[in-house]
Amino acid sequence: MSKDYYNILGVVKTASKEEIKKAFREKAHLFHPDKPGGDEKKFKEINEAYQVLGNDEKRQQYDQFGSDFNQQGGFGGGMGWEDIMRQARQGGGSYSNVDFDMGDLGDILGDMFGGGFGFGGGRRRKATTRGRDIEVDLYLDFKDAVFGVDKQVEMIKLVTCEHCNGNGAEPGTKIVTCKACEGQGSVRKVQRTILGNIQTMAVCSECQGEGKSNEKNCSKCDGQGRSKEKVQINIKVPAGMDNGMSLKMTGNGEAGIKGGKTGDLYIHIHVKSDPDFKREGDTIITQAEISFSLAALGGKIIVKTIDGEVDLKIPSGTQSGKIFSLHGKGVPHFQHYGRGDQLVEVIVKTPDKLNKRQKELLEEFGKEGI
Image 1: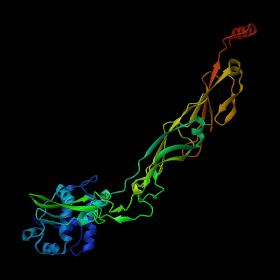
Image 2: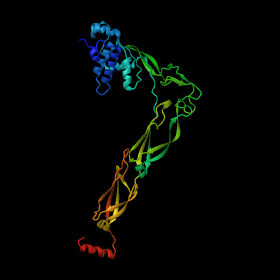
Image 3: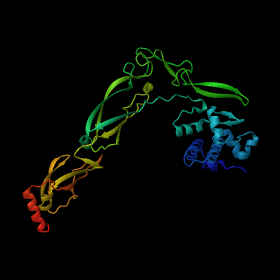
Image 4: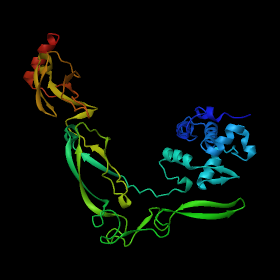
């Protein structure tokens, strides 16, 4: 049964070549087998339709004979996703006597996976090597983590070579076109198989896919474009950091090879304990001991906060374990305005050593039922 290729691509019969190409790209992206929700059968059908309608001669034959025109020597469908990818790896051309144009499909796959497929004889370049990420542990005092602090750490890492400015060539010498691949970054190889000659593309071993080479490598970095140096890095720790949190400093890792992207620096925060304060999220918890008489009669005590000492009013009849809240005396909210609270737990201290007069007074209290 004849297939309606125009309907498959969603275009009218009078559609221009550019309109057909645009429709193919949109649908190929939508049904790509390696995308979530992709459909290999649909993708194969869409590609088959485009291989016909995107070719003027085949389109003319299709308009005259329908999709069965392959019997007249035209397109012979039936290629699955594995076939397409196998053909892609072999650089396009013919597959089982099928004329298969990988050009536009190569563009689609390049967009999907970040390029580098090199279909249709295009250049195949080696991606620059990104620098390594670095992880460091940073130990902070309790209050430094609460209020934020500027710290400086020293480390040895790979940085862009100052001698060659990262290009890997000795200053004063030239960077020349690779003779092995003539600047293409890849070389063609032909293998004889029982199916015939198969042409493949391989990254050039001389220039590692760059298409160029140094007339003379840098004497300091040996052509890498980076060298090990001792550096000092300033770290701005924001207020509100807590134990176990991490900071990321983009571009402060190690330099990439020959201008490759620099890695990142990850700082893992460790907060030292404090004898006076305990932290739970943005809340600070403390304890205060008060005497039996103060708990009974009420009064004021001085309590420590991370901002300094403040007065706390104790109502008469306060029981041991009573918790008072000091609003806004907690930890600044991380990357937000405002602060948490400080909770003060009051512990009524029971005297363990009494003199004669104190005993007499307590006995009198006892007689009164207190």
